[in-house]
Image 1: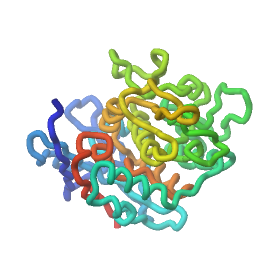
Image 2: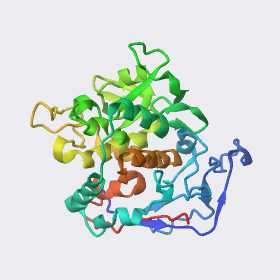
Image 3: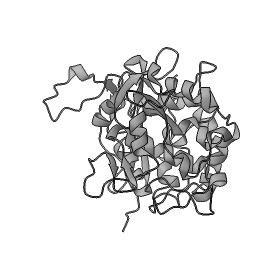
Image 4: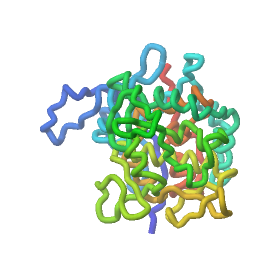
Length: 349
């Protein structure tokens, strides 16, 4: 039986930065964080027995209020226990963006009303992006390697490649292309339609051969090996660890943003799915129980927050599960019967 839990958000006043070089990697008791993390010096869980807590790490920002990303995703996944608080920024106006105001119409709602309110918010001012050249431009900026601005980060395999190596022909060796996390054949239509198939939140730079291997497989763990990555069985795929939470939050975004018109569904039926383009059956792309687990094991990091801001720049909407990780519980998890209070919003200035 699933134990009832509730969320407590703890904001610690006393904070300090720990750099990778300042810690002895051989000391198993020493928590190691990438250099752009600011970690609470008091990790005591004051929520009480049985409570689910959301302790947010406060990231560093530059003088303009933009989040600093100085590490690749694996550094965060390997060391962080908490989600990083979102630092929303409007890259078009070079100003901080008010998250509290953006999600205000969803506050005080629960269940289907909450899901519908979030869907309305992220649909209202949505601007479609052309697949070519728009998505090429978006992925080059959104997936830029934090340690090499000439490269893009290829998340499934935790690799990097030159931006100039985008695939423009049938040659795939050493090339990267545009990966649909929620596959086109799983109900999201054609790129010419400027609908979900050109939604920048769902498109990422990826190695061309890895993209082909993943194909339209469902995201779900291998039952006997949670550390396995790659294709398994006839229908399933697992990315490396630092991409799993990102994948989960992307699929959840898609299931909320495009459910109404494209019948996108997340449950545990996975590949037992029809194609919404050719039948009345819902379209599925992953096991929700596994995605919720990935969401917790691979928390939101500065790279993902920066990516959310870049996609916002191009298409004027945000991924709510990056801005408010607790919404996973309220929309897909064990708090669907609870009222959302607006969560935690961190203002950097």
